[in-house]
Image 1 (cartoon, helix red, strand yellow):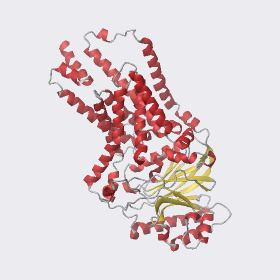
Image 2 (tube, one colour):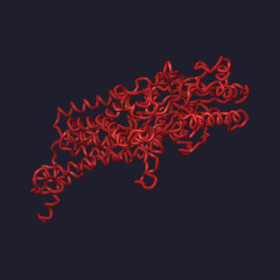
Image 3 (cartoon, one colour):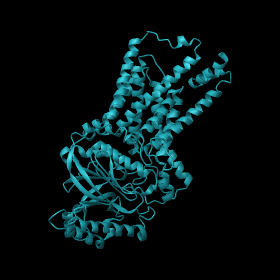
Length: 611
């Protein structure tokens, strides 16, 4: 019996500590410790890839249980993050924990926005090896935030495991906030987006970063159950007297009971909130109300990116198809009850400056808009186009045109001016796409993409009052920054009732970027309690209600229009209230306070590694 137990003891000892494994196995010291370390690194890498897949499952041919192609999977995101926690809990040094956390994050981020390769290589002409290296370099640079968080967790972890969970969640959220804010921010793929379904009830309370905090707490709890069970089994198998190994002593009983109660309240409360999700979501949106219906046509031109700015192909195609759709909408708007109130064309649907289009283009379009009958419903259009001039710079913008604005524009001499229409200018620009960061001009010069520096619009721009609604556009990846959209909700009486995203994801081909961006918009709708309309060049063109549900969806990579009806909303969610006033500072300060308090408390109590 003793001979049979030795291999089992050696196995559990090796997983617990490399030095213990070496001593018990009689093999050269460090050999199996290095092997175990490499296996844990591989484990962290695979967990990071799973974390990326959980944001939007990309494989239609095969799937894990509970996954649907194109949809996020909250449970698998918790599994992936729990695997990271295990890798950190079984680290023997702070540096080792940092490597594992950084590798997890690099794999997760590279697996999330790998499609940047498509824009740089396919459309930018960058050599494949250099495009892949650029994506990897960006992923590794952003992974440093999470490596630092893992390093600090290992150093500062206190004895009670529920406090370890709070420390981990706080450090993780601080890393997410830093990635989304510093150096203009690139928060694509934040962990909370995988929870747009499972933790949807929390979105209008704490937003995407708060959802990531909650997911981190839940993942830490699940991983701790595995770690504690495994370690106790290991001790029992290695103990000479197994009865004594499982005997409970009375020392510290009250302390254990207190910490056990705290852990029960923490994890039990979060799990209970999942069970009460619909009620919790309804409570968050109790102050919002119906603001009327809006019939819309959302246009999807499906113009290939390599033709979009070519005069003989993409430009001509756009200047023929989009006005034709608007003309058909005008024909139906007045007499047909199913006709639209609003037509929305995507980002840079009109790919030229207004003066480049000329009077021959604008006069027929504006004339038809201005001649709409006074009685009955009238049509409006929201068109994406660049504005500005060669002399004074450009903005990535949208014009809102209704009957009165069209009449004013026709009364002007020459081309229509900005003063005639509602105008929205993009505020949060894309690095390398709409502005070139300092010292990176050499990189953009390697690509065959017409890149330049655009001007920025104001942070909080007044919405467009049209059709009894207050319509707030945002362009492309601006909807990643919920706190910036929330800035328009400071005055509840003038807050938007409908959000509209105009995008062109054709830069990234037929990839999971389309699905990921759709779920980002879903989360904005949940946070702010507003419907989100999406008009895109290639997809996902969709209508999303104020509960984050996709009610209408146009097939990707097809040309067509999506006819939908949405319900505008008034009133504010809790997230809209506090984010409009303070931005994300409550999360920054709250997580920093928790991290500092737990770390200092741990220094005053007996220490324990994060296991």
